[in-house]
Amino acid sequence: MSSSSVKNILFDILSSNKLDSSSFDQIKLSKSGDKASFELIHFTNPNVPLKLIKPLHLDVIYEGETKRYIFENKIFKIFSFDEDFEKAAAEFEINFYYLWEEYILEDESVLTAGAIQLKHLLLEYAEEI
View 1 (spheres, rainbow, N blue to C red):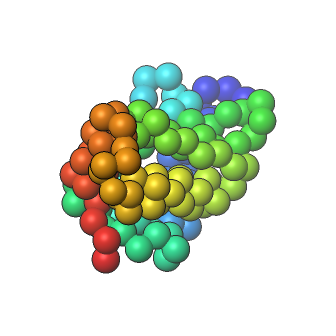
View 2: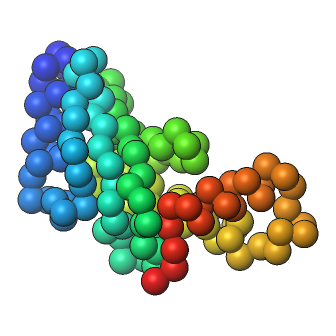
């Protein structure tokens, strides 16, 4: 699949009515043509009872060989993938919530220094509804 056709597929999906378009802001396609970057401004998965306080940067890559979408956030080192765009997006949100449950609910006295940093970073980005 050519770079321009992958770019078109990503743009069509990101701008389609398949997802709640108010969830995404500042859709930007990268120069490479196979990656889209956007800011997640609220969660769309009803199984994630969190509210974003500030936008979460996501990169979405369409991998033509495996025909799957890969969602990645470099700050939290979270990624998800699926052949279906919406499933990959939902899985990303579940992975974020998994981090939330593992670190926010834990008492800081049992966390390492790095885990405490992660906990505070999570609290900068989200809060429970």
